[in-house]
Length: 511
Image 1 (cartoon, rainbow, N blue to C red):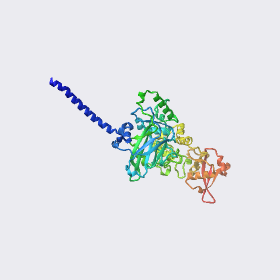
Image 2 (tube, rainbow, N blue to C red):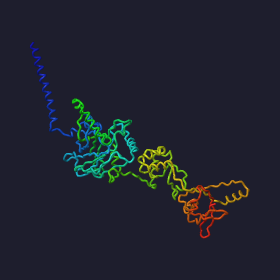
Image 3 (cartoon, rainbow, N blue to C red):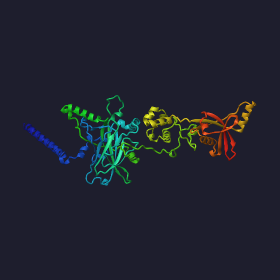
Image 4 (cartoon, helix red, strand yellow):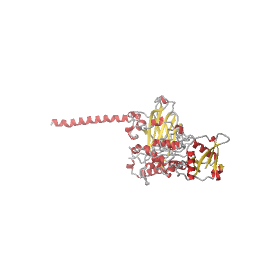
């Protein structure tokens, strides 16, 4: 019985010890969450504020962010607590991004008083579209020739130095800025989210984009290649005023929800803070490639012409058809060359350069000869515009301008004369084979005819004194411009030569 009385006492002791241990464990929580330990940087480093925690560098957990980028556009109120924020933008509207220096005193002293380089790009949020980004952007370029996905509004921007845009990268802009000075850049996004949906029947949801900023400092070679910081946010782009309507719709939906349901959603913030992420994989390519500067008009970007000079281009592999003389230069080089279906994409690029279509080379990067030749007239005009489109279509189809006058000539020889005499006397059958050459005339002048005949005989035009046409009863009529203009198209002549009496030249007689 005495032993039974001790049992409750033992339980009380155990209970008391457990309470003390539990109180001790709770005492540390208050210290960790005290006001002195609170830091905005620590809050932003929480996984719920990151795009993908697994994508961040391994040492990012304890890393203090040197910069902060704030997009001046409200976040959607219809986003659940632990999801990433979503911001709606209007197509073509200028939105401010504030570039803030978040360094502590003495942090990153190597960039104090120096410029840093930031690259802003619009990329896909969905992993599926990221894998096919190149094809998606090329398709957009096809449908919107001459337009850009991302622009900088230079007149409204502050503190931005040397803004640049590569015409081959429609979704990227870059600039320099001083972290110690106030810097705000204004961007315009010209593509809308529904342009990249698979099925377009109306009412479909648009795909989300990401606005990502990568910042670099100079290396020893004075090139901006050393990565400092990257951050991004999720956005959707609507047609003008569509973002305002969507924001209003989301707000009205949230107002109709029960108070318990509202607690599961984030409030709408007036601005969007870009959260830390991994640097974009292609930043090295962007930094190493030269980017032409902006024109005076911020909506106008230079187009890379490339090296369109034929003297700097490799020789075309495609075969050249037997071209008439009016399509050849004085050196015998062809002006227009037919593109064959068997031409590789490299051959097609060279053909575009040679035919003065350099601005569209990037657009047709992966097109072979067969791909280009399959394009209809409407396709080419939609891609290149009316003027260049018609010119490119005619060049692809090998449509050359028909000459105003075609003349066939044959040089008379001594053997041909004897055979012709026998044929006229009835002594022999007509077995003579005459070879004619085509001469194409555009100006319809005697000087042009002289030059073409001289080219045919491989002599200088100065060696031809006069050109005569054999008339009735064998008379020689001087060939004038008016006579040539009255020649019938595809007329045939036999050329005979006669030594000139006054000089060492020759007279040409057209029979």
